[in-house]
Length: 300
Image (cartoon, rainbow, N blue to C red; front, side):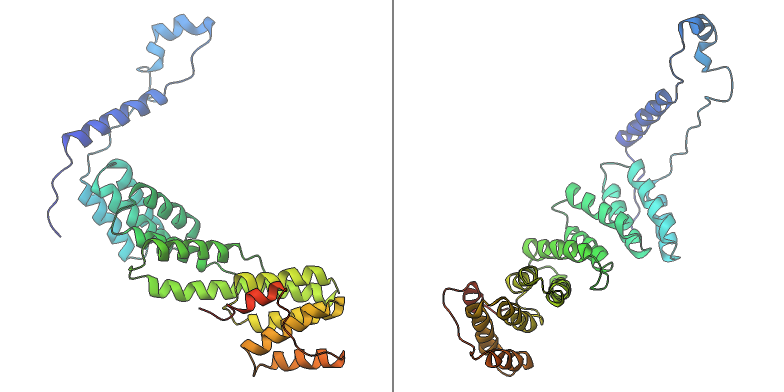
């Protein structure tokens, strides 16, 4: 590791200013009028006892603090490593050490894991150093912090949605980043998770014969997540819901699009049988919103 010179006079001056500010902040509240003379005679208590005694911290070189933090990181003491990197950033603000410290603090928080803290630190890094070569990595850590918290389909999918937003930002802003290949896979997983949630809610409404609410959920699956594995079932469920509502044209269109895109699907066979029992067959009606979706269904 190359030798690093001791901090410049500018940083030393900044430290002295910060210590002076802390001393002022530690002063007691202003005394009442009855106590003013006593306070003046006692120098406001500044020199009368140990209570307001200040102690100057030793001027520890930035490299030493950084190495101490690295040692804790290597020992997998992620919590104290994060704290040490945070200490380095505070003691040497506006320096290259501050940037490195925030980067490593984010990594330590992610490893702990303390995902909320990692997201906050990553977002702060992105805001402070938008042109840094490490900024794509901060997007990746923030997205992964949410991705690792995605729960089962039966729970709220807010973390999946947040992961999707950050991963999409990474792909859009840094298309040549080394993280893009992995992120694109995780985007598809997150989209599949969100589609699965909508399908579960849609089925719930369908079993309770709340057909309009069910249709809305299945519509969302096809409008937002049509490249996921849930598209086939969503089309069948729309056939089922529309047919139960007596909206035969839409039921026929859903079945026709299902057959066009997934001709060998069991879902299509079931849709065909459902319509046949009612004396009709799959048929696409061009005025249907489903007809427009069908043109891009399954496209990557």
